[in-house]
Length: 358
Image (tube, rainbow, N blue to C red; front, side):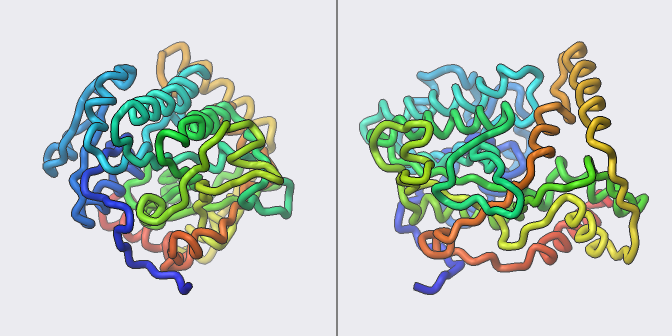
């Protein structure tokens, strides 16, 4: 069957809940869901900035995410819950597992306790699967091997969802590095190249990476809900139902653009997008990023702040290869990437300039 980029609701998207709606991907997802006519419920922490959501008329439910009873009341009558809330820069290691594993388990159990459990679409990460050797591509069924606390905590969330697959319909999406309008994590790369024609690259050998534009990820998440396969019921073993050479990997999708770039090549792509024919690529020897990350992390802990640059991120940056590919995305989700990666980067640059970021 030929892939199509039109969305038809084989699974109802009438009333949906979204965790992490105040975040980068979540903000784009709720806009897309509203376009599709869904009634969107946004779950928010008391400390989250809800001004934009409330101004746009979204239904915001504000409560402590550790309150299991509130999760039950919020999810009752919901067709789908898109679980995007996560910690990517925790103050302490245990906070990764609290935000990414324990919260996912709490949401899954709340859904399972309802007479008509909603479909759970869990936005995980390729970090939960881990890197692969140089020159290889992570495909469905490749055994998992996360290398960071972030990856292990997201993997824990996957297993928490899989444990309830017999009671709750669930699908997992593992995106690569997400970029696009309103993204702040990769913005410094765009800013540095656009303003001073310099791209700082940790290490000499750069791992191959899978990138994905936020609009493409959002469409894959929606399609995972509409027509994606569900996790099979049964025990979720570490090399069992979700992964492993002989495993049933049904219901788990990787989300990455067809083109793979390393961090250095990503800088070249950004330079072309901003209009520079030449720029400086500054390679920083590997011991230096480790030292800087340790210093930043220590300072942030002393000041009780999440560290934007952590040793955990250097572990991921030192891995050999993060390229992922999933042939089931066009086959099962009927989605083809509408623009080349370079054009998506150019669209992001255009948005940054239009909004005065560059």
